[in-house]
Length: 313
Figure (spheres, rainbow, N blue to C red):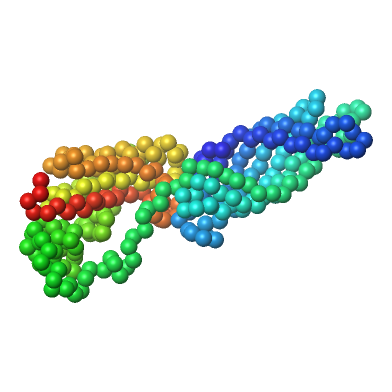
């Protein structure tokens, strides 16, 4: 099946069913069915974990049924509950119940009752999985050190701001200890592994064209990259779940490329940059609300803090 939205799947369906023969009959009951299926489900990309990640679903099928020499219409309804097997969420397992009815038109010399079958079992779903970010360090590890052992200061300190390079996230520009050795930029915050924007980037609707209101915050990103020549940055584009997966993937890639091009046009070496689009595969919030979808449409800067000792090439 193909996902039109995180909540809706469509696709073809096929079933082979064989029931044991009755003592008075020579052959087993065999049915082949082909048709189309629609499924409504809780999104598999939900950021929840444990029992909260369970995905209830219901689906319906309209079928062409072949039994022996007869061609007949049929329909099926099913409901189930799937649980992810592992953090990658490639495999989902869970119980289901399915009702199948084969419709019997009036035919002479036939039992003209519909065939009705109720099945109970386990379903196994296989999909593309979801990309998960590496968990951030615990809060205690993220907090700037309030006390630094005197011996730490024997370590290299390229910018001579009394914050040793081993903990200085901006080793080429002076900054205070309580900000991890980085200047107090106005529109960005230096996190452990990324630049966090205090202001949102804005694009033309459904396009990869940056709007003028985004230029000041990007100019400060340029300043931070010029201050810190050792940084290598991955520009990531993300979308909400509206629209098709292919469209969202292309849009997220082009928006990330547009930001990369802006940085290059303002003097940043392209060798320090890479862009990547993730469509709606890494939601930051729920796609069920307008506010959540707005939050999920974003560009992020993931930084590789490449610390090089003095005198190195």
